[in-house]
Image (cartoon, rainbow, N blue to C red; front, side):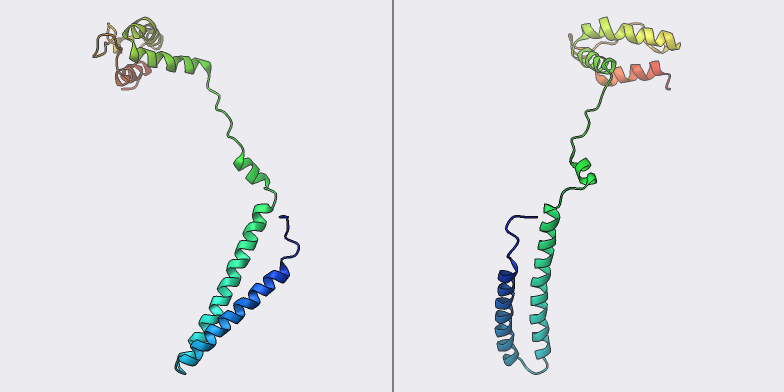
Length: 159
């Protein structure tokens, strides 16, 4: 329960009374100024304005009540931190090797290329790989990720 909400009814009734008086004065002067055929519209507008203010107040009251309510189990689970994904250390190491293989031709030739050849020989797809490791466009860099992806696709047996 929010603090200080025990004695709001007298002030709320006083504010509604002031609202009814102000709307009544405005509606009475408008009622007197309009023709007989437009007077029901003036009364409807005044009542609609009062109902709108009451509905806005009820909506804000219930919204505040929901904010002060203790969160449900669903809300607690939704607000909880997501679990840290667990990735196998082998995959993390392979990712780093591929990244370093792109950055350095030497790492690709000494680490990744022998592993690709070994994997291709185990799967019986060695004939799909070139005899020499591919080179990057720049002298010290390894092949691009697209070239490495194509080599892995060939080793995997896709056509």
